[in-house]
Image 1 (cartoon, rainbow, N blue to C red):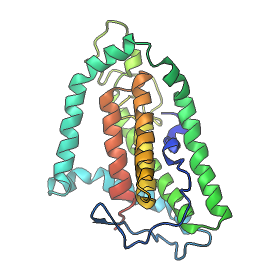
Image 2 (image 1 turned 180 degrees about the horizontal axis):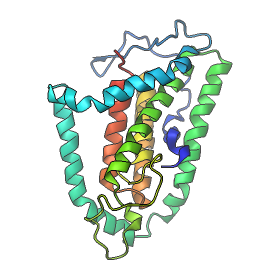
Image 3 (image 1 turned 90 degrees about the horizontal axis):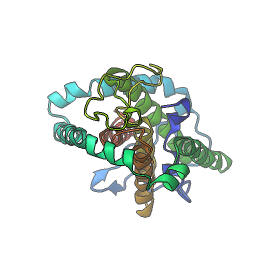
Image 4 (image 1 turned 60 degrees about the horizontal axis):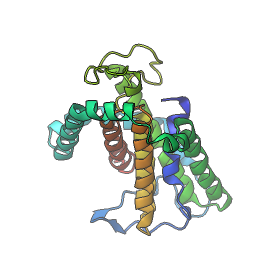
Amino acid sequence: MKATTFLAALLAVALPGSAQSPIPEATEIAGEPRAPTDRGASTNKGFYLEGWKKLVPDLLSDQKRIWLFPAAAARGRHLTPALAVAGTTAALVALDPYGGRYFQRTDSFGGFNRVFSGYNTARGMILFPTALYAVGLLQKDAYAQQTYVLAAEAVLDSEMFTSAMKDVTRRLNPGLVPPGGDFSATWFRKKNGSWIRGIGSFPSGHTIAAFSLATVYARRYPHPAWRRWAAYGLAGVVGFSRVSLETHFVSDVFAGAALGYFIARDVVLRRP
């Protein structure tokens, strides 16, 4: 995870017309009330500044909720999805050696990897949302500006959590396993790297950022429906590129996607 990957899914938010007028707040998405969206923006026309002023306190509050989630789950809140994610991640960890060996041997994704390299996806993820934010500023669209602030908050929350997880797990990247090496013995083995950026490969920093951004934009601009499909589809492409580039295992990517979705949906967009 490099410094540029703090906005690591900007490909997922490059949706044409995403700065158009939002749907009314009373609208329900998939049977659930939309998360409150005012967060200081009293009108859709104007400049949104309060979110930037509150960003640091909001991040601190978010981190408290993220790290105390196990206690909340123990009390029954989100317990079922948490167990489902944990079980699926464990199953994928068991299958990681097969995927690791496959991508180590194949050269089928050379063209794809050149297009969706870590540098290219990071650069795209910075430029596209920033361009949308600039359009929001020019149009004095406070909702679009607020969406960008919330997306930035979700990515920063995700990356801070991911950095800590990487430093604890210190999992080897699949590309560091030598030909014929043991892909099942990767945990707590990586020594080189920066503890600030995160040393290990679990979970995927690119993917957690991609899905946190995709979730913010998909939920705040849910209509027409193709926008949601495009947002999550592009985030999925970012995740797959991490596997085909041998930067992450499938389990790293799945955990990153699930965590990014949860942090954006249930922490950032559902602030008490």
